[in-house]
Image (cartoon, rainbow, N blue to C red):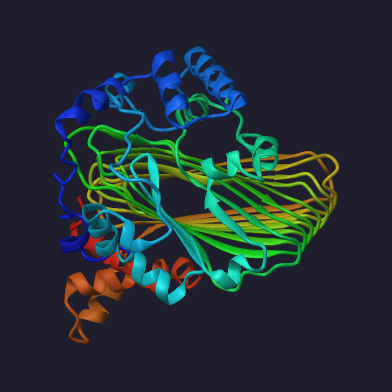
Length: 469
């Protein structure tokens, strides 16, 4: 769990102390060439099909242009981004075996405490590799698989990985998906067997600690027929004076009558380019729930997509974005209705402060065979001053005449009357504004487990004070 600024942003910003023999290897991984991709593949001991997949993805990357649907990313130069950074440790299932300097970082973030209190399993990634992965014995006894993706690719689930890996998010979807396919490293694999309900969440936490580096983890989750899972993703990085890149990928497969909730709390530093891709497909009677809180990065492209493939499948997306000084956050959600009687609800809120730019994009597609489907989009924006900006860009493509589709958007400012009322009750102006913003974000925080709701509210309070760099 992320703590106050004194514990988050001041975590040994210069801690990534390379040994002399590591420095040259670190620099050699900067840029994106066939030699670097081959080197990563060999380092990961990829099977032959994955090595070929990486090289094909690189070719696709080189043939594609930067997307024109988000904010400019002129400050990102791939020639200066290190695509693979191995921490000085191997993955462990025992917290005590994690090196002290890495363990200290995660302990300040509250990872082991959260695991003991409220999690069924935890994976912790440091730069390009997982350094810790563990699942409770009683959860494993139910047949639940929670491990690093690379181990799964070589074990008994190898065929399952090969048949699902980057089948939802394909390398030719956009340039950064191709980049991910070429240099991905780390991430988690989860498989929940039929009718198994995991009562408490699993969590993966990603920490990018090296300056000028990229993180490209891949998360693959398969929730089989009638199963139920809540998965939580946390992200953070210290602030450096050079660009960092996050281009991860999340692929979620929700089976017949299954349910998956995927919650994300992101607190990337404001030198980060967050170009993440997330996608889910839902079979008959299945449910996909997204809960998203985005508080960091210099630039973000983040539009989780859900494909409602099966009859009576449904999706809910609840999100909040906070754009402060120097931030341009382009976020939203996309849903594709294919099956009959499918339903979706997108409910987002954005906050802009100190010149921050927040853009919400929604896309609702209802196919010609998605009869009697329902879709509703609601987006609300709150601007805290007159130098910030908020935009809403909805898109709807409806191809059946019996669908029920609606969109609602509202943009406003904090009421001076509300601030005055709270101040008349002895509350400072700063606290009054923070309380109002906290209430505005309540629809997201109430969807999270208690400790994560507290974390999100702390981040909002710090953002209001301008305390997060």
